[in-house]
Length: 149
Image (cartoon, rainbow, N blue to C red; front, side):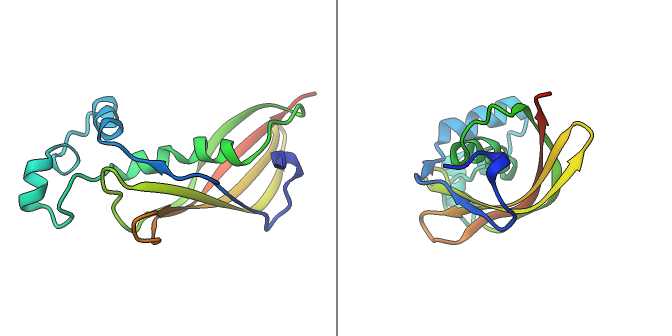
């Protein structure tokens, strides 16, 4: 496994294991964000009224799992003092993540920019559903590696 500093533009990193999105995770995210829409929490109503037949994860729950997934595919570096989420350039939710489905993230390094604080890494990410093989989310995010002096 490479460190972030050792990656080259074009390198592709994929999570080796699937992560299941549980209803408990969805409920906790709803509580943390105050987003209690029934499509995320009410399984009975979803079975009757939702086109998905069950509850679905918040899109931003799926997006918020990207940094954890990214951390699983790179090795720690003694050259980096800290990693800072720097932003998202583009994010699209393409398919819902149903409660109980599993996801896996893949990342492609697109660009490295020198900054006064360190190195800014632009990474394209996607989240694929185990159930369909289709992407649930695609986007570009930015990570700032603050380098040790």
